[in-house]
Image (cartoon, rainbow, N blue to C red; front, side):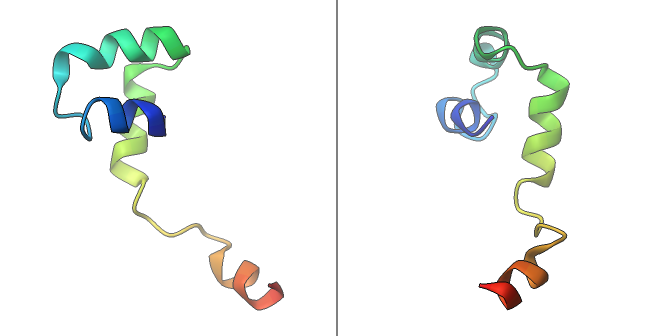
Length: 52
């Protein structure tokens, strides 16, 4: 999904989203979900940092 994000400039280039999603086998809904949640912290981030 990160590739689609980069290629469509964060979902701003609307005409290419369907093409890239189809080529990579992901749904457009899944891509938009990714855009909405990509900046949210991982729920196990605190545990991972403690064990690193």
